[in-house]
Amino acid sequence: MISLFSAEGLAGLLFLGFIGLTLAGAIIATSACSLIRSVAGLALCFLGVAGLYYYLNSPFVALMQILIYVGAVCVTIIFAVMLAESSELKRVTRRNVLVGPLAFLASGLLVWGLVGLAWKTQWHPAIFYVDNWGTVENLGQSLLTIYSMSFELISVVLLVAVVGSLVLARQGRDK
Amino acid sequence: MHVDPEILRLVAFLVGVIAFAALNAAYLVWLERKEAAHIQRRIGPKEVGPFGLLQPLVDGIKLMTKQLIVPAGVDPVLFKIAPILVMVPAIMSFVAIPFSDTLVARNLDLGLLVIFAFASVNVLGLLLGAWGSRNKYAVISAARVVSQNVAYEIPMLVTVVTLVMISGTMNLSEIVGLQMGGFWHWNILNLAASPLMPVAFLIFFVCMLAETNRAPFDMAEAESELVAGAFTEYSGMGFGVFFMGEYANIVIGASVATILFLGGWDCPFGLFPGVHWFLIKMYFLIFTVIWIRWTFPRTTFYGLLNLSWKILIPISFVNLILTSAMLKVF
Image (cartoon, rainbow over all chains, first blue to last red; front, side):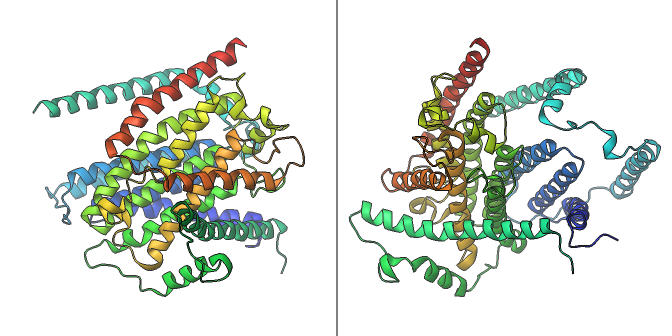
């Protein structure tokens, strides 16, 4: 039995806290009545995920998660909502009766796939990995060697997004 | 009951960091009022205690005894969370700041990134508070905050990337360690790495002013146009916490500028380096921030965005390219 007042005990408690944050954030994000509260829930969820990354021994990814997802993505979403939503509270109305069951089916499939994956993967203890696992140097090297293809593809996607948003903005200006 | 010494260390640093942040926030208000008064040929607070030194405590008591009004139309959850979201990341950033080679709460390898990651949450807090207030001035202020922060985050981060390239590390203690031995070793005068280093410091300082919403870039608060901007609906300590968060962010900005450009705890003449030099440099920068606020009028919003997109960003990119070229050639 590990004491709660030891470093390991507190770390374990914090880990559970991060899992709780992630789940609570996800639930708030999907079930809140106003869009802005959903985004706040999403930010909470991202914070929890950042904590989990930290426990996975990759502090760099954890900090990037906060910097990009909480600091940039959530702020951009809120900004878009502010420009789009009128100031009155709007309740999201369900358009179709099938939406609910279909959503449950889709998420059920996803959960089934993830659980199957987690079950079949051979897990190794953390000691198995080399010391510099998750450091900035290691990340940079693997991004430009093993994962260079995915890296390039992601940058193409971003380029397409930038060009697309420029085209849309341009069209709006002509009207 | 046996308690791990690591836990005691954690608690000690937690208390120390929070006390440092709160005391700084309180006494920077006093400094701001005194400095403003002297710039305007007044005396400033003088009744409470010698030189008005007890004024911040009295202000704090006043704010805490006031009723926390949550207006009828606001989103109560977001309205209450927003001040906390501004204050907590600011306090957490203090954990990574090394005040001297021994005085640091956590010597993190990614210390620089920790500070910028937590600083980026600040905007989210302001935005949620402003939107949750459901007040037209607050919403205008929120729109301004976002465009301003997006615009000034880019040159700031590009300048920081330049410095990380020169230092080859994101550990703040190591960055200071590379600058030890007199003011000619400091990054601001590291002309061998890039002849534009003093300009880079200027860019960083201007971006810091904009990121912390200080005059002449205080478009978010702009009391003559927007009442109090994002804080319009806040009363009592809700407003007080926002205010403290702002000052804590200024302290962090000045500390990071000191660490990155001014050699941290290094003495300019190579004598007795220590925490006192860090504090002298940091408070001098904060003094300058306040000095600028009471000297320059507020810019227009378009002037603010033009300054970033048309001047600061191109220069910071030129500096980045020049530095990488210099690093590879020499």
